[in-house]
Length: 285
View 1 (tube, rainbow, N blue to C red):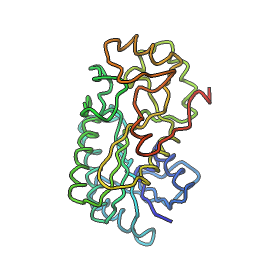
View 2 (cartoon, one colour):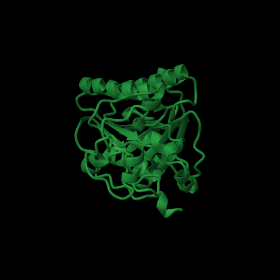
View 3 (cartoon, helix red, strand yellow):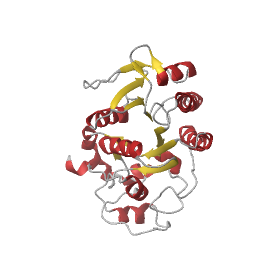
View 4 (cartoon, helix red, strand yellow):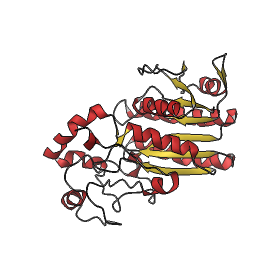
């Protein structure tokens, strides 16, 4: 049974990730500043990844708790813009990611999945994207310090892969993470669709986010790949083409969209990861 470290395993996406990996045969260790509220607990160690010494020890050996890892899922971060002052977000998230990747290199871990973000695509799209649906083909457009760090992380990983040609690093540009209990609010979005245009009315069910992480760990090959990860539908009952016509009438549609199809393209994830998300808010409301 392969052993995987999950940094930030106590967070919103982290809890779903840990649960999914355990259910699929992985031996999971949660490395976080706080323990998980999930009663299906896995081994846990409290780690502050802004401290490089703690990062190295956590990914190599902590006493008799564990001894080394076969893979790493890096989710630990201040999870969104605005939760802390920008300088604090930059310091925490940039230091944490550098320390985690550097410690993983020292520990010989060559299979890494990490959380990038939909924000690198240009959210909140006050400057419209170049086309719709948005995808991985245009350069990042960070519009916040949080997004700037995510963009810098992606560039940093390029160099870690150059230094270590056997490294496989999979970056997942997650949309807004949701649990079933969050879906009760979705019908209210119809009152003012503009309030959710900031991320093109997209979301990701935490369970499908966890699926994408597992598929990233299973991906063949080496080097860096990044993928947009969203649910296949929008948060709206209004058809997607009508949303585009009302809010982004001047943007080119690269391909037809139908029904409530997401405008965060998951085509690359479907093609290269075999990503096939199963969960929709429409099954819960």
